[in-house]
Amino acid sequence: MTSEDLDRFSVVEERRPTVRIKMPDTPIHVEDIVLGSRNIDPATLEDEVIVRSNGMPNYNLTSIIDDAEMQITHVIRGTEHLNNTPKQIAIANALGLEIPKFAHIPLVLDSGGRKLSKRHHGDLVAVNRYREQGYLPEAMLNFVARLGWSYDDKQEIFSVAELIEKFDLERVGKSGSVFDIKKLEWLNSHYINQLDVSARTDAVIPFWQEVGLLDSTEDRDWLESIVGAVGERLTTFQDIIPQTRYFFTDEFEYEAKAVKKWWGGSEEKRGKTSDILTSLLQILEEVPSFDVETVETAIWKYTDENNIKRVAAMQALRIALTGTSFGPSLFDIVMLLGKDEVLKRVSKAIAHL
RNA sequence: GCCGCUAUCGUCUAGGGGUUAGGACGGAUGGUUCUCAGCCAUCAAACCGGGGUUCGAAUCCCCGUAGCGGUACCA
Image (cartoon, rainbow, N blue to C red; front, top):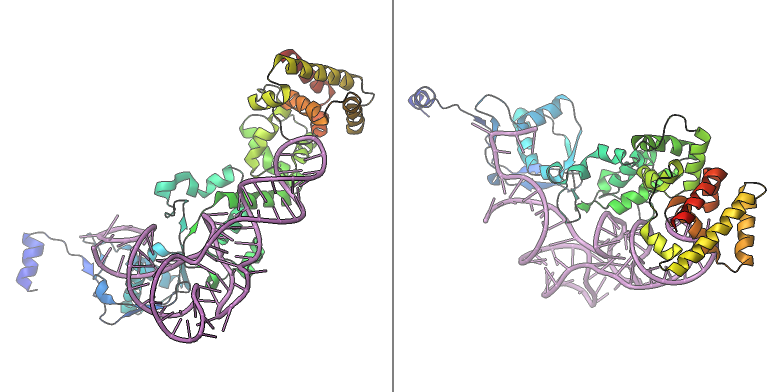
């Protein structure tokens, strides 16, 4: 370019120049811990803009300089960055910078096999949302670590300490992996069940509070007993809400499916259910001592002597007390609710029938 | 379009010249229990296709195909 050209471009036409890097004419050697090493033909690369016309440097320039400045030893990133790597190496070579080790790890994909991204998947990739929903960080970490990596053909559960010890970039696979929420749920319930009742109660209290089930007067021991009764039924902490709301309020619907199956669809069957509940009401009222053993013995005595299926009586009672057909041991529920509340709910159910 | 990457059950994966191709999640079935969950037992389920190399390929090589990623004076 002559100086006349320069004047014409900058003064007359007011063009603002960019700075580009001239790509080398020898192959660019890229070493990658996951993908292995290869040589890139620089002819396939453009002479990359490294400084924009407004004077600001671009990503590939700043990034590789920053890495060098910070003495980064390993650049670990998604394979979406693969195409940037030779450009950055070329820049580093031109600048005489040290080249870090690269590891391009496979992408995490949605169930349709596409890259998970903020843009398209929103809450699915918002890590804080998982905590809000009651996932444990340990579960999340374990899950993500096993995406694209495995230690052997036996171990699925890895504590953070084990991950530190055993995780190895060399064993990371090359292909993308699908984010499978079912597996995360399994891991999460595993880690929740590792927690003792007290820790589980601590974890669950904010969830109760958030939906207004809990006021500050509730007794800690009672809460722990509820959590104890729920046992290993939590997949996420959030599950505590539907599974325990009837402990805090008697304002619940009798679930239609459960009612149809266990209370009966016909007048006749409803009548029978009503009779059973009436008998149970009397038994519960008159029982000499309100503890699990006494109540259980009394109820079994009644069902067995009257040729009533245990399951029928129990499910009828369960729906009366909780509105649903599943949940913790019914005797635990009875004790946790207390005699007065149990009698009240059974009476209400009989009236409803 | 161009450049690149990848390819084992539905999913996460182990393995890697000769195996009944292993495990886990999920699914199904049976057992246990007052239900659900759990637990126990059992079952279904895979080497992308085609050519080579080889006595023998899921495994090594080549070619297809498909999927994905990247294609900015974004990061």
